Amino acid sequence: MYATEKEIVVITGGCGFLGQHLIREIQLLWADKVKEIRVVDKQIYQKFLNYPDKVPVVECIADCAIEKELIPFFDGATTVFHMAARPYNFDMYPNKKGFKRDNYDGTAGVISAMLACNVPYLIYTSDAMGSLASEDSQAMSELAIGDGPASKSFILDAYGETKCSAQRLVRLSNGKSLKNGKPLSTIVVSPTALYGEGDSCIIPHALRLCKQYGYIQRLELGSIQLVNKAAYTADKTSFSHIFGNKKELRVFKAAREGDGVSVLSMTYAGNAAYMHLLAADKLRENSVEFGSEVFLCSEYTRPINYFQYIKPFVEQAGYKISRFSLSFLTAWFLLFFLEIFFGFFHLFFNVQFPHNLPNSKIARLVGGYYFHFNCTKARLVLDYKPKYQPAKAMEDTVAWWKLNYKSYC
Image 1 (tube, rainbow, N blue to C red):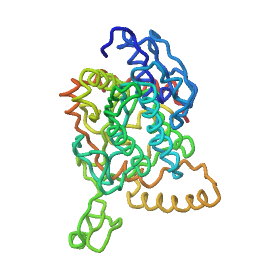
Image 2: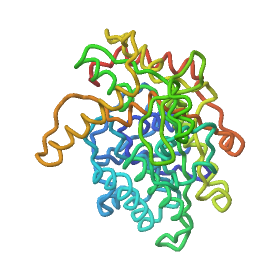
Image 3: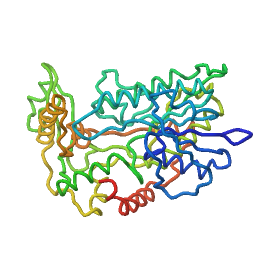
Image 4: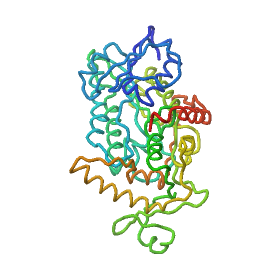
């Protein structure tokens, strides 16, 4: 960040998981550059991380989709970190209109308010997982992902589609004229699945399942593959048929010990927040060269299986993961038909059953696909290296959840 006097920074969604990690990084690294942090959110700001309060944090209640609500809080600011979004929900009741309103319309509102208030720098938080299609994704780069799959078959459905649409809007808005005639400069940081203190998605859902049913059901792990019917017919014993057309089938192949399947890249929220500051510095350094660029954010660690990841959090809360694995195909079909059944009552009678069961896509996410990302671009361009060592970050995360898990389930 380069300026002769201290500046005002806005964080939309600053009350959330990643937002509070960003506040911590600003307090630790930018205290000599920032005079005020404005947290724009629909929720009331409640600090849950331990860090020094060197920079005043101002709470601003507003809806990003309503431009006029943002104007008073954007006035006088120089940088906006747009993190506000409706997160992916694991349950069977997706709010597609809510995803569009919060993720796309909210981003459009932020950009419009920035243009009106002459705020020159926008750092947008995307989602690497949201950009993927329903298929294995190995060593994915920014170029390979682009702004989403050409097939429009997003692994995270409406959430992924709206996040990608918002990312595209942010990139296209780079260079637009502010009210004073100067250009708007934008940059995108796209983290993988996040872990850390205050997680509002993966760990809370696992704990709610445990609280209701007493344990987490382990799934058979493997890979979902697209094969032709001849290959399936020749070796039916190796595959479980899921669905397909006249020529091709999607089949599930169970994993053998040591197979690199059913894993995903994880990133500590503190490291993702740190990359946001690096991206902001780079954008201010040379907005012509780096405006509209996208940077994937991950750690240099081996991708981890979902059940390995949640095990310490589940066990320290007094629960367990089942010893036996349920057949992937059985689990997927069961969740799929329950999704249709419960969806019928939700659609026509607006009734939601509090079962906390995940949707069928989650079975495919945790049991059938390989997700790995390559953040070489960030390392070379932003000089990004994880600020927090992953092993210590995971240790701190487990310790924090041991003290706070009851508040999240």
